[in-house]
Image (cartoon, rainbow, N blue to C red):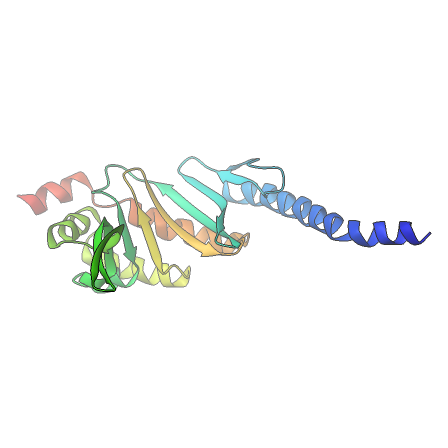
Amino acid sequence: MRELFVAAVLALPFALFALLTLWRRARFRRLAQELGGRWTSTALFAPGALEGPDFRLEVVRRGKGYGTRVSVAVRASPGVFLVRAAFLAEASGAAHVFVPGVRTERVFGAELRFGGLVPAEREQRQALLAWLPPAAELRRLHAALEEARIDELELDPTHLAASFRGIRSDATHLRRTLAALRGLAAGRTEEARRARAG
């Protein structure tokens, strides 16, 4: 009898984890319907991912925990950037835009070079600004990013993404996030780019 009790106590955390996984998967399936996407399984104990016509929502490992990454498709971005949302409020904020590069650190009198994020050059920031919607629209989108609690944006040649701590499954918050990201991903129209360049 004692062995059975010990086995039950040892099995309880695994049973609870399995129940939590099943609940999260069911929640993500409902969320897929609410957001107009489809649910896909990613791993045995993961809640899965949601894919829509222009977006992807997935749970990713972040250190010892989990995070939620929401991304939307973009056309012809100007490169790879990490952009703090504050850049949209003050488009001249050089301290808010970063690009992959090599940085030099002094350690015990020696200079070491590391790959990482470095502040963007002026030309890179200008290329990003030319790609983004006009300034008046940026202020509105900055307010939308604040409402969705987005602090940083990741831009690569095909996606614009925001990441959050923890597993997010609140449909209202994710709709706000998608709306803000889609607004930024729309960028400028081709006519507006030509007019600005000309």
